[in-house]
Length: 138
Image (cartoon, rainbow, N blue to C red; front, side, top):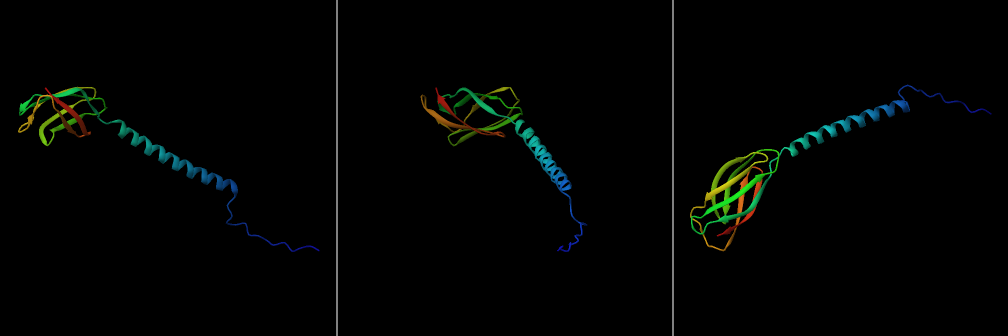
């Protein structure tokens, strides 16, 4: 006895090779967008300034002491140093440091009294971030 054959309408079916091609094209498109995003992000991150403090910052003793310190830009972009703070007192600097260059900071901290032999907490405010340091009073 023969079973009746059921006729199937093959219209609308997608063949396996076409499915593989569509999935491959979609995966390549997503991979291309990911690589482009990573390249643009990496380029932005690589172009940043970064300051380090060289040596030991020093303060003169007494009323309105002078802070003397040196910073170096080890990054790849210019950095603007805007303000220096010792304890709660601050002084404006507004100096740019080019990549690979150093800046000698000599600034008077008004209305502040320092004592010889003491160490004071300080911060440097820049457009590349805040840098903490210790200043020794001579």
